[in-house]
Length: 590
Ligand code: ATP
Ligand code: MG
Image 1: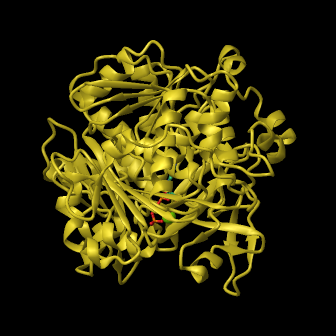
Image 2: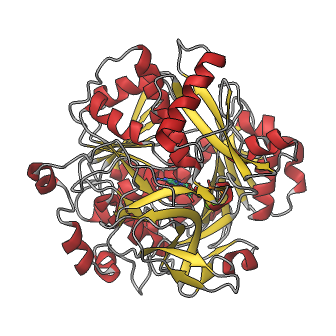
């Protein structure tokens, strides 16, 4: 490995902070953890059944908590709608009753294509109650990605808005044979032929519904991956996953009943479902949902006015807030804020410590994937934070750094800070049960008792994991293995840099050479002088062998709609190669 000594000091937790955290002692909690005990905290259904929506809603109502606030929705125009657990359950029941009156059967597929509207939450929970399978799509997808995902997953029902339907679906609706029902929110007049207006249908449906007695291994969710490395895969998740959603919300996000919690991820991605709907509700918190897109001032206001206790966001958002801060460093007023976490991409040490400056507390990075269904590695509230590290495996999760041999066998590398593939011992409840229609690809993820994640990492002597890069993104230069994250984080240390992405380009001598793409903060001029300054800074910090040979300035970096930098696209463009699957690419104007 080529680890650079990090100049970022460990952020120590005080005894008081440790004592307050849900999980107070990592070692003790890890040694006594059992998934069966976590499962026993949930209610289950008669006959050994288990249903995610039952655990998220009805369990609280049966325990007398129906009057607690479940969802506070803030519209784009600042209109607020609130739903108690009992009210949210009634809405979910209406949706489930509607599905049942349409003849939708257990195991059939319900897709949503909606902005962050309350109906999205009714549909997600109602679908699960009805025993059908829920697949959320990001509302900003274009017609082709929508159609492709509906064909792969054989969608039976689509819940969307009239506007999205007209723009993106109507032209090909008749060509997807599995699609029997289209439910449209916000119909101005009569719905288009073959579609049903959602609000009147819900109003006419029964607010009581007996939750389908799903079995723990019944399919509940179909989630498509972000498409960062290639064509998105459809990961199958079952009702049993709720055991992991529930317990990891408490350990990794420090959620407590009665908390006000804000997850900024869209339910079109797995984070916005596992931790934007399911986990907060099973933990009895009030979920704040903002319909609007990212906006610095708006986010400031939400953190303050909504009195957010726990905030779960993503590195891209943090970097955008930092960029604004460089112009206007006003401390955030968020007196209720207790815990801040981030996921989705490596969180640069710069961003972790900026949290302390701006909020008085660090961002806690955590790591997981669509495939793992829930958080696997995390910086916990009671743990010292080493900026740049993803933290330690959660209780119940065994992680290792492994090496694949040419014969396909896999062995663990036990040396501290040795680089290898991040692997997990299968067995946690929210692990995917397959890639839909891609059995071979699924099987290839496993060897010698490990699930291989496709990410490279290192583990230090205290058990903290350090992300190196995706296996596809790692650069081999003159005998060095270079992880893009390390180089990007060093570039981020420079006052001018708002975002950085690093790729390897073929080179006849070195094998590959490092090239960096950089977006600047306001007030800095792209040009030769700055390029030389950045190259000098990188060489000083990383050494000439690892530092970029070239730096290009960009207004913005290409990202997926879930906010991940698409290094493969930068590379394809640089080399004049085909751009590959761009279905999840966010428009680059932003
Ligand atoms: P695809 O698999 O389609 O290429 P994707 O891997 O980006 O897309 P997701 O499942 O949404 O799809 O993302 C999981 C990946 O995101 C992880 O494998 C890892 O590469 C990255 N990631 C998530 N959290 C972190 C983190 N805390 N630090 C570093 N990387 C992270
Ligand atoms: Mg992936």
